[in-house]
Image 1 (spheres, helix red, strand yellow):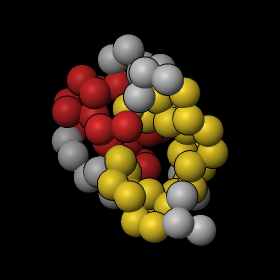
Image 2 (cartoon, rainbow, N blue to C red):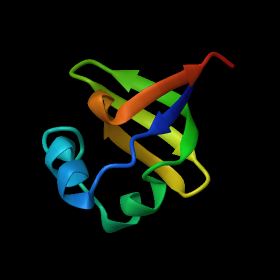
Image 3 (cartoon, helix red, strand yellow):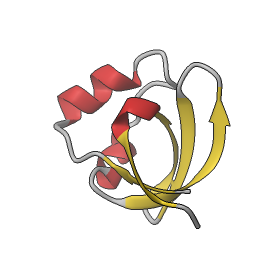
Image 4 (spheres, rainbow, N blue to C red):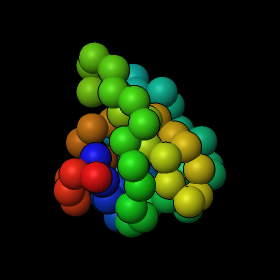
Length: 68
């Protein structure tokens, strides 16, 4: 699946990252970018592979763009 990582403030992104793998400063480079879902876990954790890195996101940070 193709997704877009929501382009929110880093404060909002950090808040949503709590209990979903946490926040790493390099994740800020991914805000607003598109990527591919690499893995999904229970509890709303989703690994997204994007040009700026592969990170675990809260599903609420993602917008579905389409299927591959």
